[in-house]
Length: 79
Image 1 (cartoon, rainbow, N blue to C red):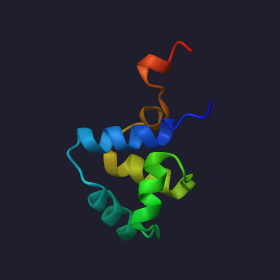
Image 2 (cartoon, rainbow, N blue to C red; image 1 turned 135 degrees about the vertical axis):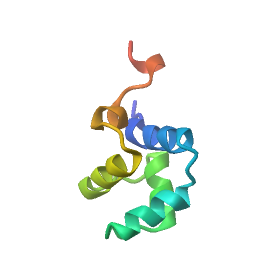
Image 3 (cartoon, helix red, strand yellow; image 1 turned 60 degrees about the vertical axis):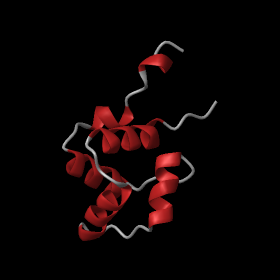
Image 4 (cartoon, rainbow, N blue to C red; image 1 turned 90 degrees about the horizontal axis):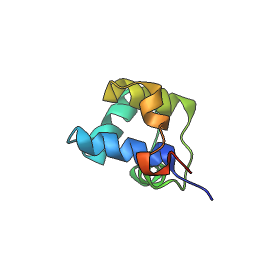
């Protein structure tokens, strides 16, 4: 079964930091990452895969570690 670990974690961290998707999108665009609002939404939903550059920029913006972006949810950790 396909799981959307990365997208779900990006969404969870964004919401925990009280950020809107447009805030993240604006930062990414300032960092030179060409991404549309719909593409960003698809990444959070797991229907688009992000680029490595996207992942690095999001990690820097969120000031988190890479493992936080790729960590399995506790409920799925024992599957």
